[in-house]
Image (tube, rainbow, N blue to C red; front, side, top):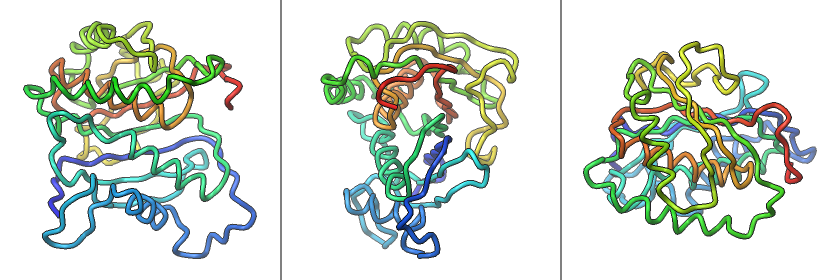
Amino acid sequence: MSIRPDSTMFAALHGELVSHPWRDPHVASSDAYSLFVARSSALGWLTEAVENVSGGLWGMNDAGQGPEPSRVAWFQVSLTEPVPDGRPLPVQPFLSCAGDVVARIGAPRLRAVQLLLPVQSLDASTRARAVIPLLQDAGWFADGDPRWRTPVRVTLDGGQEPSIRSAAPEMLRWMRGFTQDVFACDSVSLPDDLTDDGTVLESPVIDELWRGPARHRATFRGVLTEWSLDALGWLAAFLAEAASHNGVGTPLMLTADRPEGSRSPAD
């Protein structure tokens, strides 16, 4: 297995989780780590930690719950191969697996998601075809209930690397150049004050993984087809492509939530 040191993906799910009454939290095989390994292995996404074994999308690093009361669970993996030229970052399967694990533990109520996106793993010079499967995958959401559509805020933070600020306006134009119904982006802003936007949470990973601490960021606002990990995974991959295409070549910390009061019948 070839795990590259710059290929970490991390997800932190924030909100509330009511544990299933029948679940025994003291059984080692039912913790977040073991469940994530089992689920991603069953779906063919896990690269086994065995020498000369290939296949899969990621190798397992760690997972857990808490420690903050609002952090439902967190997961950390490393991509095991370079992202193919014609494929996006595998954020959607990553969050899908995380969602399956959390649902096995209890009944979640998702308030916000944080994602470390290894945008540096994308070769901008060969990314022209990567958006094609994303547009094809968008068809999964075609039959969603229109009442599920919900306003979202998504902040991309480059830490000490400022490239996201200059790239953000071009990213907005780039995204609007494609026909898709998953995310309609209304605006982008470049806030200077780290306390002026409710989407910003303290970084859940060490600074060395993403050129932290937080400093340079851009906030995208728009309407998402549904408030789900599935749709958020698609959106995160789409934003990573937009960032790479417009000159960002470093990790980005993504934080997504909904403005206060924005709820849908799907909640």
